[in-house]
Image (cartoon, rainbow, N blue to C red; front, top):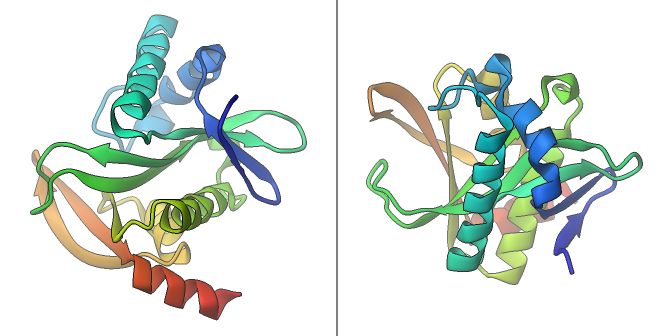
Length: 183
């Protein structure tokens, strides 16, 4: 069975080997990867390897990014969700990190905010996490808006391997308070 979270317009589910072509389309696009710390994918084999890595993360940590599927059409839109970051960043290590990226054709439609909010809700309600964090490059204003619309708060800027990043956070208590105001 494929684990899934649904919203009005989206299905967030485990990423599958059959998503390789769509993931390659996403991660080979230089515009999509502009704010990532990796170069665009060069071939389908790289996408297949990335899917295996995400599946390994899920097995190891019990959590990994999800494929985001448009509910009505079944179309792959991007990826979103949480993963555990094992490296040291901004004074944190082994923390839950929210992330997302979408095919450029689907930018500006509210999908990232909808997926991010559903991810936060799901993991605060099912795992009762204490806090969830997110980072984005300083210049990625669209991603910063998604995080803020999802209820996360800006904490600080920090250097990550020579790149200026922004750090966002939300605690379980903040999520519950934010959610009760926005209902």
